[in-house]
Length: 238
Image 1 (tube, helix red, strand yellow):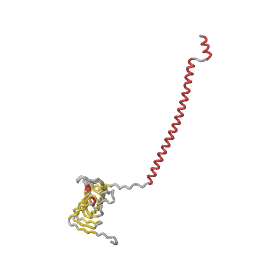
Image 2: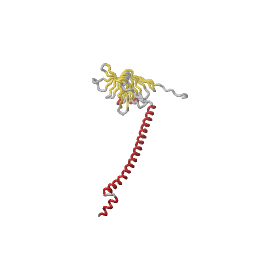
Image 3: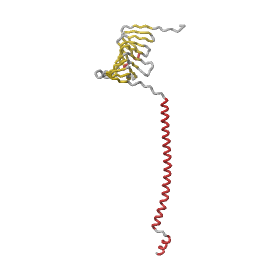
């Protein structure tokens, strides 16, 4: 019994001392691992910051290149939007533009110098036009065109009535002049009850009334019809 006590005094270590020492020995390696993880995390953060910086510089470079390319390209030419002018309780549109499709899906465009909607007292969609022009198919170079001094456009029924100095150009190269024409846009058909005269590759013609179908593929004249055929010149030696 006394031997054990003497041994404890010589070594100077108790159970509490051993327990405390063991705890201290276990804490040191854990501290070293924490410092190593912190270093790795610091390196990772530096790489992430560098990556974000490079990405930001790349985005800025792409934006600058796009701006430079866009600045060197000419701006697209767009038709001016219609301007509305109110005069004496009347809303007048300057340079209006009406678009649509006929019964076959082919596009058409109606433009004018100015237009006035007839309002609620008249049929909805009826507009009075000054210097109207109709393009039956803007996608083609040989399309039929119509122009006049004044007109009435019914957008609901796709009907354009033209009056005074009406000029009709067909796909076949003929140009007709009359004082009135009703263009049934949906049917691609023009009818007129006024006298008409026309000039084209084959000669000239006059009639009391007319009907132009499918842009001039078929033309019907009625009343007193007078024609003048232009003789084609033969090549030399024939």
